[in-house]
Amino acid sequence: MEQITYEAYGPGGCALIIEALTDNRNKAAQEIKHILTKNGYELAIPGSASWAFTKNIEVGWIANVNVQIGEEDAQKLDILIEELEDNDEVQEVYTNAE
Figure (cartoon, rainbow, N blue to C red):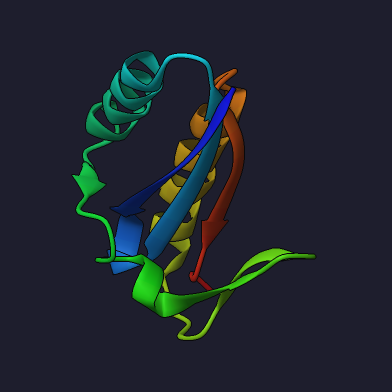
């Protein structure tokens, strides 16, 4: 099993860190990419979203910079995170949305 970290931007421009645990890197990437695309978003290049977080071994990713999003974007974000977390490959999703 391999742990992979993906980065994306979601509703309202909030950053997402998606941690996956997989035995098939290509399958995980395609499934996460499909979920993001279906919701109108896409994978970001490595480093483009992680700058907004600090990796803490005990807690995970902690937001350094928070982004205020509106109620509509918050609802879209909740749906996106739920779909991502329903995927067997995804272990955790972090965001800097408030």
